[in-house]
Each structure stands twice: as structure tokens, then as C-alpha cells.
Length: 271
Image (cartoon, rainbow, N blue to C red):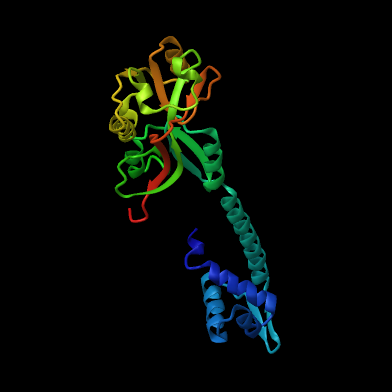
């Protein structure tokens, strides 16, 4: 590669411009540079190559055999480079998106369409995602708010009220709405708070402010177990934005429902 030392793309571009124009003056006009500057570039290229590239006469320039060989190689090099750039631009960059549990499928399709690149969703608890973003392990994160947002940008994607989810056999299954008083004596099917402590605290504090301080019944994560727990205990309810199971009923609050907010987070530009 030592023979390429000092030869830059601009030198070869200038050389081919002279070949196409047939004169230094015409090539300088095409390149929009001064003729003396272009002449210096061609002379410098000839010094670096070590041979004359043009025969010069009163009518312009004509390629020498060495120049003809270099012109063919330069055209090929520019063609290969152009193809390489097109290939590089066509490759989708992988974008890793952290994903908390229970995100609706339509939101995933929306994110895949809106994010440039080849999206790969990586399951991760809301509590862990800010740290993973700051460490560079994630490009984006989908979390349940609130989470610590120092140094992060946030876009709220979904804001929806929670309702009461019960099994079809539950005494509340036939009502059209619930109020907080009707939940008195009901236990709450709950998840491990360390997955989304901010969200867990916000929901429980909202319930407490409305007068309901339920006994928490914790169960392992999983849709099958979720439905099973609600079907086997008549004093057990859950708080969810929906109930995606034919055995379950979702009942809206008549007023003052807790709210779930799903957000897209990423590192701030200042980081």
C-alpha cells in the first residue's frame, strides 16, 4: 500500500475530470476551482505516480499509456467505492429496545415502524432500564413510569386508566363499574415491586388515598398463573388496563382511577 501514500480521492477525481474534459481549463470549470490549482494537483499526482499521465499540446491534453491505465483503474475504484457505500447504507443498524412486561402488541408494532434500524426487543424490568441505557446496553427503553430519569429523555407512549380485573365467578363480575368502597375486604393480586418500584408505589399510594389499603397477594409472574390465581380465590382482584382472557372481566372505576403510563426513554443528547 506504500505506492498509495499521498494519493487521495480528490487527486483521482481531478485526474478523471481532466480526462473527461480533455483540457485543464474545462476540467477546472467543471470542478469550480482555479486552473492553476488544478494544474498543481495533476502535476503532484504525476510526481506521486512517477510517470507522465498526459501529453500536453495547444489543443489540450491526451492520455499517455500510463495515464490510460490509471484512468481505467480509477474509474473501477470509484465504481467499487460507490457500490460499497450503497451496500453500507442499505444495512439496517440493530437497535436494542428494553421492554417491560405487559406492553400491548400494537405498541410494539408502532415502535418497530417508527424507530430507524433493525429493532430487537430485550425483556428488562422498568427499574433496571435507566441503568442499562446509561451503560450503553440499550438504545431505548419502554418502561412503566415513574422511573429515575436523570440524564434521560422521555416520550409518553400510552396513558390509560387501570380497572379492576376479576374472574367470571367473582361476585363483582356482573357490575358495570366499581368504586373504591366496593373493594373493601378484597385482596389485591400483586407483582414483585422490585420490577417497577415507582409504579408499584404510585398505584398503592393512589389506592390508599382513595381509602383502600388491600392485603397484597403476591404471585409469580405469568399469564397462566395470573388467571389461575383469580379463578381460585373469590376475594382476589387485580388492577390492570385490560383483561386479555375470556375467563376474566375488566371493570372500570366510576371515578378516580389509577393510571398506567408507558414511556419510551433514551439517553439525553447531553450525555
